Image (spheres, rainbow, N blue to C red):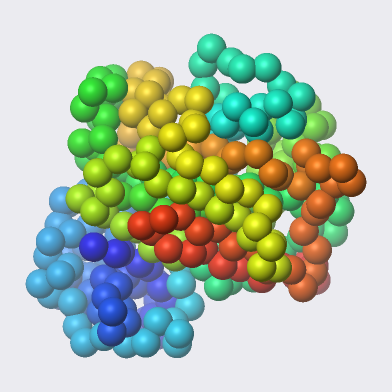
Length: 280
């Protein structure tokens, strides 16, 4: 099942994506579960298939991040061996963790904004995990049972601000610099996230490519570790890290500019695609 959020005439809505387009949630279902986060919290995704309306063309919709209002967006940095090397770092004993705010994220097709404050706007294609069943101290062996599904993630990074201190936060939270989508593919369709393959393209040219199996910390390990620290809630998003090939790791560096299009494609999920513009 593919779950997406979008702008409707009466505000943010959600639906199920099928071959004929997107079937929006019925008014009755939205009255009970106003957004996808609430639907996940109620373990009611099955109701969406039963109560969705007639399909409308995807091309005519403005997509939102699949979960527009997560309680948490938790990002794992330096989680592919080749990326660790290209950034001049050493392998860590524990995951490197930072957070993004929902205001920094856009849906597939929306314009991403290179801020006036920097010319070092970098791309990072990633697999993101969406939590379906919350919990604390989740055992690694049971971690995938807590996953609602998976989506594509573009962890846009303002590199000079990221380097201002030891904390990544400043470079990761400029408004409209990241993206997520186009939808969530539910976990029943992806038995093993490590079997997926990720590719990032800039203006049609492949700039990143890696199997997800190359993660230094696997999806179950990440969930187990994070849930030791905080309670994971339905709708929480975990971005699992980016492989080698980022712009800052190249000679000369390759940064995003106005007029570019950045795409993140993951097998079994789809393609997240966004144009880039300068901040007005």
